[in-house]
Image (cartoon, rainbow, N blue to C red):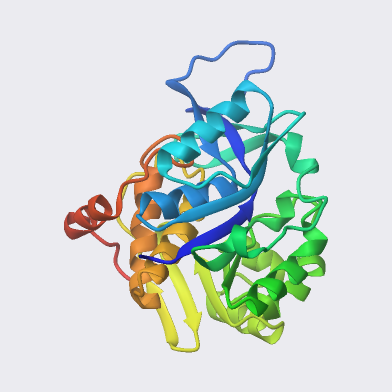
Length: 315
């Protein structure tokens, strides 16, 4: 059996509307679509892992409202083990995404239970980690109670023999390395996109950003470069892996699905370079559909799509 991934992170229900290229205050603008979909870094990453045939268990919380019920239903539909998801007496975290014609987005976010979850330590007990060989944290910045706990969690997971990984995502509070630096020596793989890497290191150049992150304690670094694919820096080597030529409709969740696909490939004992190629493909599939997890396919369907899809020229 393929070893599973225990994820911790936020669970969000997204309401996405497209296209919104400008706002008319005091008026009404008709749009092509308004879609409700599962989002959130923890939810999208674990859903991707499970959809790709690797066991995934998620630690998080939803509210005791209809959106919480919808989020749990979608996670279960994707095959995620939801036994560690709490239902709290509050609102499920919700985002309204305004999606432009080119797929870029602006978010309005109501954190809801995100402000409450992880006020107590996450119990990495044998029961909770059973069947898992990796512990992954998706976006510690989005969960105020989780921020100070990340270094200890990663350290404890490693002490239990679990591989570890961390996806930075965006820090709305602007604390960046103040929060992240203590975690870097304990994160076996660090995922970050170009904008996040620039905020963390002061440079958008992938090689220079990776070098500065290594100086700060990171080991293996995967930088997500959008339509240009990704740059991978590991002890085994360094690669730039081109992305796939697709037309983006909505980029919501693409980075989370990328990270989930990368981890799913590693759990299948594939090398980093191949994990990056599969992650690029899953990201490309994601941006062709509205919603953070709508474009997900099974492992076999993803490989079939890759067999005929065209990669962009390397840059």
